[in-house]
Image (cartoon, rainbow, N blue to C red; front, side, top):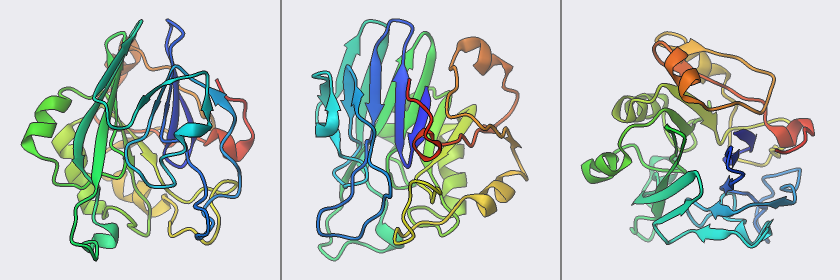
Length: 238
């Protein structure tokens, strides 16, 4: 698995199935969030958790991938990708002016006994039905930043407790080399200090990790893995 940047993940299985989750783009006519374009990629499956510009650049992914945006599930070779319908976080903890709740999907990717969950921009109060459908989670990708743009630190704690992963991957925060100063996001320094109180922080200067059952069994208690975004550093993509 490789962390590309912002909320984007790129997964490649031993069976050569490639999955892209939440590729980003700048909003036309809107505030510029990103200083670097999303890389040219090919995939077998591309997923958008919800229809916001920083999560929905699915048309930019080549290779004629299966698109998971409204459909529920794709099984291909050694990879099983599933969408679970849920609700987007209330922006800055206020209800939308329309009063409507925006759809957001929890995404699970399972391969060789390891299950990853990407929550997109989900609310903290995940329904009991969605949690049941989610099942066991080894690795949880969750949006967090020091300005509490989508979720407060307490809400992130609550989400981690509800899903109970072994490993948490922070996503959707200010990243030098990717995120413009005009983006309404903070870093994760304060959040990492907050998490240090009850978890182990496993720092890394790489964007890539191997997700295996053996690696998951090695984890003793909750671990936080802040990865180095590949796009920011100019690293090659899987």
